[in-house]
Image (cartoon, rainbow, N blue to C red; front, top):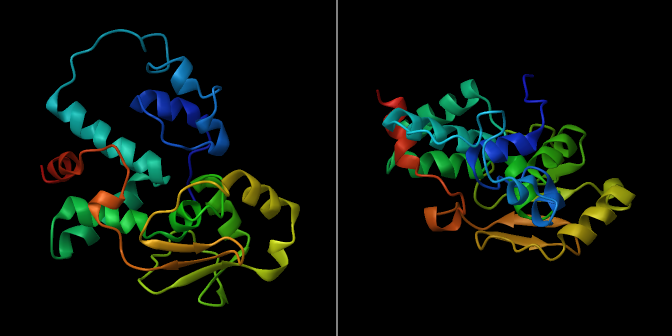
Length: 208
């Protein structure tokens, strides 16, 4: 499976905002975005006039990097969003939010989406009582995700509980950190998604 293996802090700097790809580091004073709020590379600080296409591309890249999705899979989500009733851009973000690895992260059961993806692949979670190891699985309303019984006693999840225990959980999720479970109460609305991106620009880009 293809995946990005470079320095993730460079991605945040390229988009000019925190994408929260490094867990607790993103909330600390050591976050590179706070120290060097400009694009990486020798021309990162130069002023450039951004075209309409450039704005659309940056919107797409921000969304892709935020959720850790590569181009082919992102386009597949866009095509799914087009077929659904309603606004395509909002449908796209709703699909991305309903990924299993994203919900694990949102519920505070992992420090970052990358860590959530790795832990899902290693069979540390269950979906409705059954083991699941597919990070891209789309979760539905009423589904319950839980940490496997053996994993709950590990030092890894004890550390996650300490670092993520105070992180706010979206209102469309019901997280029970005592029992290491989270229930999907409903699918998120656009107001529930704190992603700083203009999704209509993504729709415009793919509609050309």
